[in-house]
Image (cartoon, rainbow over all chains, first blue to last red; front, side):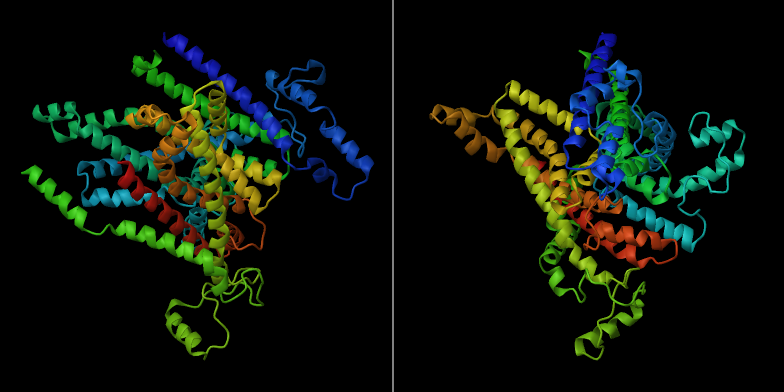
Amino acid sequence: MLLRYVIGRLLVGVTQLLVLTIAVFFLIRLLPADPVSRFVGLNSSDEAYAQAERNLGLDRPIGTQLAHYLGLAPDEGSGLLQGDLGTSWVTGSPVVSEIGQTLPLTLELITLSFLFAFLIAVPVGMLAALRPGGKADKAVFVYSLFAGSQPEFWWGILFVYVFFFVLGVAPPPLGILSPLTTAPPATTGFILVDSLIAGNVSAFFEALHHFMLPVGTLVFILSGPIVKMVRQNMVRALQSDFVLYARCAGLPRRVIAFYALRAAMAPAMTLIGILYGFMLGGAVLVESVFALGGIGQYAIRSILAFDYPAIQGVVLVITAISLLIYLLLDIAHAFIDPRVAY
Amino acid sequence: MADVSEIQAGATQKRRTDWLFVVGVSIVSLVVVLAAIGPAISPYDPTVSTPTVSMPPPPLAQWPSLFWGVLTGSVEQTPHWFGTDSSGFDIFSRVISAPRIDLTIALAANGLSLLLGVFLGLIAGYFRNIGTEVMMRTSDVLQSFPVFISAMILVALAGRSTTNIVIALALLYTPIYVRLTRSEVLSQKTRGYVEAARALGNSELIIALRHVLPNSMAPALIQSSVTIGFAILLTAGLSFVGAGVRPPTPEWGLMISTGATQIVLGEWWPSLFPGIAISATVFGFAVLGNALERRYAG
């Protein structure tokens, strides 16, 4: 039953991705942008314009372009079906490898941020849940409302001013390693993992140091919704019968709190997954403030340069990862609670 | 004992002023007022640069005497309360002129998506057929797009104008309202009053528009206060990465972006003040939305 559920969900996910790919493909071509004149300049001759249009492949009928992109036209070269996202119009290198170089950094950034946001949000949310309506609860409520509605790029800039310019404890916002440091050889693409594999401890700590402010910014923003959610679930769990039973049985408060926390975290998983998927595209601004060179910055560069293959690739990859995360969460959920699969 | 204290706590809570709500309403009112009269009362033209470049704001201690000087006319030139940026624009004038742009975009985008979303949600909930199923699946696909990146694509490729930002945001926010209204309509249409209206011989269209629609709008209206705040954040974010309104339009995100290059040199004022404005505005709308939710949805 579980297997059938997983296969069903996978099919739906793949269909969703396909529809989305085609939608993005047509959407960016429907918008009144002229990428050709962007590449040849506004005052170019008609011949140069036609030549550029041919080079970009935009002179062909739109159906042919789509077939080529999806990889359904083998004589025109590989496409999506063969795992090829095309070549960037700006750099001329394959979009797949460019995304491969930028995606790991974003994943590292978000994962670290979620980790720390959790470490902070769980105790704070629990504290608020202990006495609903109390002073601590009210303070935590205002905090979560505030942190959840903030312009993260502005806080990033503010942190740069305070921690780099005034206090001098943070590095300048110029990427993940100082320009003078040689990066460890890329094995996995994740800078923290790679530097450890290469045994380069100084690069590891330097990257951590450079992650300090961007992660701090995201932790602040993320902690808002996470605290709110932990508090809500915790209040509900503390009111449930099994907690009452545990209390009657005379179990120590710490054990009861642990039981309640475990019950509160199960429904939280779904929201975490949605937030994580959202942050893949939502970390754009923080990446840009600190010039980290993640997939968000790659997206900005591609969009502002009208680099259609790169834009399609970024949207496709980000959506695919989000859908995959939702799928894994649903499977985990179905595994824990088999009623979901029916 | 516990019951008595809880009742007492509930009673005093009712009587006490909800300070958070007061703060939220004050901020939102101030922003609305500034959107109306901000450009008219700004001491300098927000889009014309002055000869003084990168001037820091006067120290706080001098503000009262400067203010008195302006009132009595002994200070000839209006001071740059928030300083000037690297192009010589007066930051105070730009900060108080920006709500007209930011709030207009947010309200227009939100109004458009609210109208469209509630209407489509009503249809999708009330008349269930293949057409509305297709519509819901389309809205699923729209909702699985990464929001910020989609907004960037729409605005950058369609042209960086205020109208295009409004259309892009409206497009991205419509599915939220479709979903909210649809689920409310689904629960409303099984109620007794619908059957009563039908028994009286009303046509289905009249029932849907006159009876079900007014009863199904609450969730969408509550959501809209939160969405206005997020629309302001998104508009500012778009300008920040260079895919929003064009300079020298007075817009908070654009101002933060101009100041960002200066901050590593220690010039904190060009980014600080517009940032405080966004931070407070979005918080104000979030508080308002939360209060509405507690009052009408709970």
